[in-house]
Structure formats: C-alpha cells, structure tokens
Image (cartoon, rainbow, N blue to C red; front, side, top):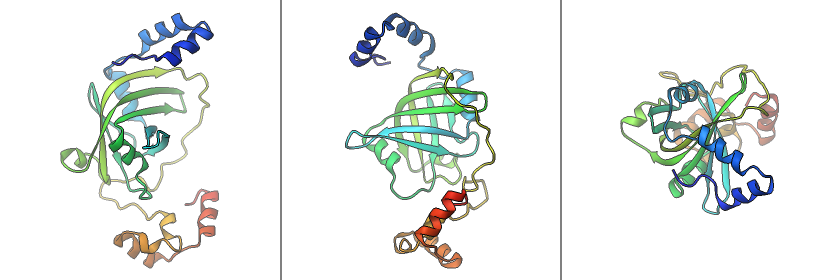
Length: 217
C-alpha cells in the first residue's frame, strides 16, 4: 500500500494536533484485503458513489445504482461492477481509461454505515466477466489498494422507498429513459432507441424537466 498520508495531510494533522490519532486510526481500520464483513456489506448495497479523475485533473463524482449485489467482490483483492446504458458521455468510464485510480463509497442510510474503497480499475468490454452482469455495456474490474470502514457519525438516516424501474433485470427489458424522448435528440440516438421514441412520441425539454421535478422521469 502506498504511503497513506501525504505532506498536505501531515501538515493539517500537525496544525490540529491529531498526528498520533491519525496514525492509530489508519493502523486500526485501513487494510489491503476484503474481509468477509466487507464483502457482505458491499454486495448488499444497491448504490454507491464512484470518484474518478478526468484529463484536466478535475474529480468526477458519480452515483451508480443497480439491484443489490450488482457490485461483486470476486476475491479478497478484486471487485467488479457494471456500466449500464447512460447518456453517452462516458465520463466515468473514459476517466478510468485515462487514469485507473478510483474511489468508491458505499453507504447504508438506514443503519447507518459506510465503507470506502480505493483501487486500480480497468474497463472490460467482453468476455466471461461481462456475462455476470445482465444489461451491462461494459464492466469495471478493480484491483484493491485499500478498504476501510468510515465513521457514520454524520450520515442522516433515510429509508429506501422503491427500486428504480430502469435497473436492468434478467430476461426483462428496461423502459426507455424519458430524456431520450426530448425533441432534437432523436437523430443522435442509436437506432433501437430512435425506433422506441417513434413508437412512444417525443416530448419537449420543458415537459421532460417537469417529469424530473415530479420524480417521474
């Protein structure tokens, strides 16, 4: 594992007299292999936050959602997660191709509890790994650098109401996202999506944002 604290962290710790505390916290919680508890928690989640870095040095934080178990711990130093159909920007996937270092934050908002994961990632577009994730366009395979349980003190408690209807399911086609129906986008869509819009009808941008406000998009 690389040196966990940099000079910038050490300076802050010195300023607030937490150097010894920070050292002990690191020694007690930061590990380089997934334990059984880590695996159970990660594979029970239906969402996580992914951090990547773009070509300009800007961090990109993305929400990733799926069915519980959509992130799989393959062994004690490897995990994988799917990349589903999106808006075609491929911000996270493109970032990973350029800079393999990623961060993942898993949160249980009901308990509450959270786990942080850092590692080196690779985008996989074919092969047996892709077959593990129905509905995925590609898969991210991550080699673990470090994992640690983080203090849940400031996590507000929320309850999950229902799963997104857009999450891919085995042998079940997900509905067309409303944003693909916005007028002016059809010529840029893939053929299968364009045909679906033709069957359903297009909507204006204003109509789409009204759906977003109502939680119906």
